[in-house]
Length: 274
Image (cartoon, rainbow, N blue to C red):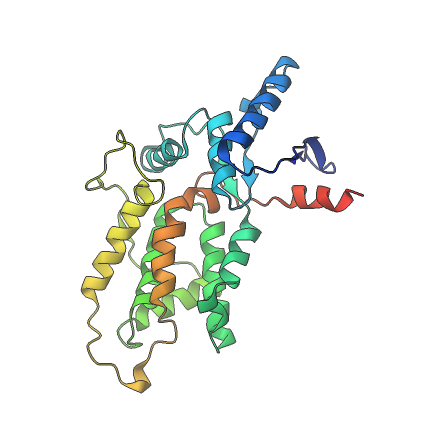
């Protein structure tokens, strides 16, 4: 369903589609027909603030193709350029529902299997901080320390990072020098003109994968005593963050839209269906 929520009014379904195909081409065809019909009625889609979708690659691809007239790869490129130069205009920001992102991590086995509720709370709160932050430099600095505590077995080795994460999730601002996480970098081995895979060659993946590699080169955990075990040591979570979620960072954080987004309007509409 395509659901709009104008101002403070109730959710309004403007179009619905029943299909057995959940593919980018089938969804894009539906969206193109809707867009064509609305433009004939004088609707200017450039005035839309954003489009919020579930964590579905078919939806993401279809929305980008229809409303931004570009591939999702190119959309991520434009987001990267916008963050670094503020010169590239994002026609229509695409957002992933913040509630769905939180739920994805809550259901991860490596989160559910943590015995300490305090550790689970910090990890989920950290995800919430990234979702809510609209400053890429702050996010990058925070993610750098998050990756360090997820990759480091020794608690003593990453104690300063653990303290910083605790301070942030408890409502304190980041106060350390952020120059070590300068975002104005030239990405190595990155050619946006060639046909490429979405996640592995997103400019955000290249940036954070290099960050992760640098962190791993700095860590020396040859022998860790039982008393020095880091309770946040979750290398699998670090791998998934860098490989699956950080490549799409502009879609589930507020660095492009300025605020977190939810598809609560759609869920609200579904509750009204008899």
